[in-house]
Length: 350
Image (tube, rainbow, N blue to C red; front, side, top):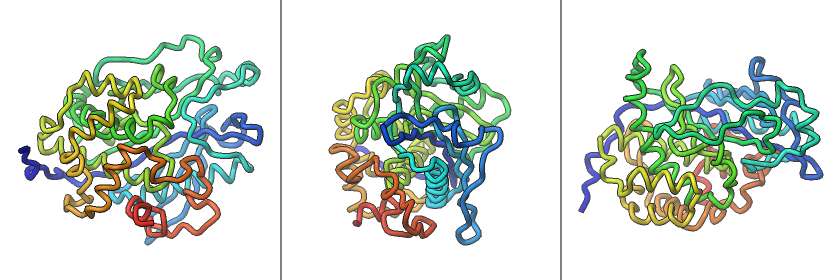
């Protein structure tokens, strides 16, 4: 019998995110974000405050993708509030286009030919990989028919070393643990909503960056935007994974690097679910921590989360592509995710 009692959260973590999303117009054609959003160098600030906490967001184009930068906070609810502010503003600025979960859509050839160079180039900031892998190299991005989205999770709370090799030594165990648990969970729950094309180029297992504030985990796609409750859950799982690493307890998770890499990079939903079943008890421990380390999840929420991994995200979210209703663009968003359907707990209790 494995003993999970020693697992504790080592510090209070702050979370953030800069997710990307595509939009489609009336004929289902991709609407380039550069046609209605400013560049990343001059982002648009949108949003408001809740209880004196800024839940605003910066929105801008990343070429064809729309991107937002959420306001970081140790309270995950405020981060989700900020994501909602950004998504709603992107939708409003698009003049009626539909936000979609497509994470590797094909861009029409005529649009690729006509688009200015500044919007054709792919992201220039390098990503690193914990397993020293990389996706396909794109020599001429104008010839690449696909573009991709990520649901990047930012985490801070450590005393970050100035020396880059020391940073890698500190953070790579967290990246690998996030792969083994969070990455595997989203393959299990959402692989049928993913494009297999995406991980030929981007978002491979082990992908990360090390900004000054800490860690940017870059494996997840925009599938985490299927619902505010799902975004909320992604951060919650990430926090629980940090607790396992903080407790030097990853040896309790029954898998190995080769299996984790293979399942994520092949988007193998069946194999991911087998890993979750094998590690059910520890996965349920991961789900229990709030930001100060207290155990607070109810048995009902833990069971629904586990079951969603085995049955798919759309077993809980009726229509993952319905951004307007899921994110309440036409309704009042209460703030601190306290309104109906604004958090994972609320979604599970509906």
